[in-house]
Image 1 (tube, rainbow, N blue to C red):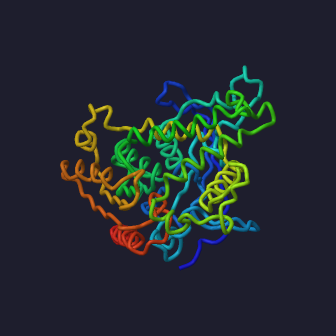
Image 2: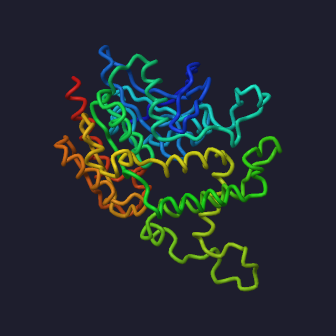
Image 3: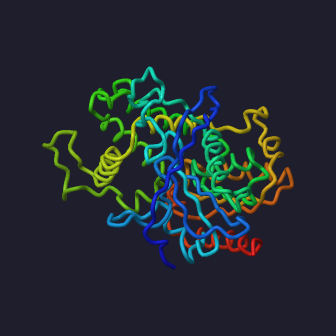
Length: 381
């Protein structure tokens, strides 16, 4: 197996306004994307990969001259890998509202009243369904009528599910990993605490911090620390850190603000690193899109009625120690699909890593994904 090698980001501009679920519109926007592999003559082998909260269109490969620039799912996507780019044409797209090249809060606001300033907190609220509609426009522009598959993990899995409901005739297979049909109250609560950390940072300035030449780094750091805890299992944190300390013994004479335990150092490092590259307004937008996702709401909460519109085949994967998107949530989706006599496969992987398992190299998980896409490739041959 090898990498797709050095890749080049691309961008596509859309002049037609994108209607949003909120009733607002996104005007004059750009989407950043990358592609890997070759589109076949019948344009039937395209796989769209949807990203999660802090990821982007850079799914696989590296950027020339940049160390540690591997795509966030490079272990899964590439020649000879489970999603084999020798067989499939893979598309990674950055969603509107993100901060990695697509139009987002840091982009200039086209409203004349904004006088060329960045959107900041004036960027319109976006939903998972809005993202899917934007992705569909990109797929149209690439000349692809029907996707071989839409794939995503976590929030990306929600987008894959939304594709199967919003454009049921436009994909052959939906592959949804470590996801849920909606967020639990506990999940919404975690998101709200993280958002409050950001908006109460003195440098937030109502979301227009760019005009003040500052970034709410403290709030972003704490938000990431909170989120990171939820991505790991208790077992994985215990195995990696336990009660290990930075020194050989407690330093009782030090301020309570000092780092004593290794897990503290790890979380602060992750938070500090995140605050250097991620946009605070984007964090607020994306976590709220997570909160809003609930396709069954239009059907009185009946998930079986919701998936009556589905037409594609489904592959769902969950992980036993993922307590943020627990296997029980995937089973809810499986039951709804079985109730509708839809073609569905489900794998529940006994993995110790928690929610982050969908990004890791578990051989059983990758075996499931390899078999899924190998079967799909045979159908397309």
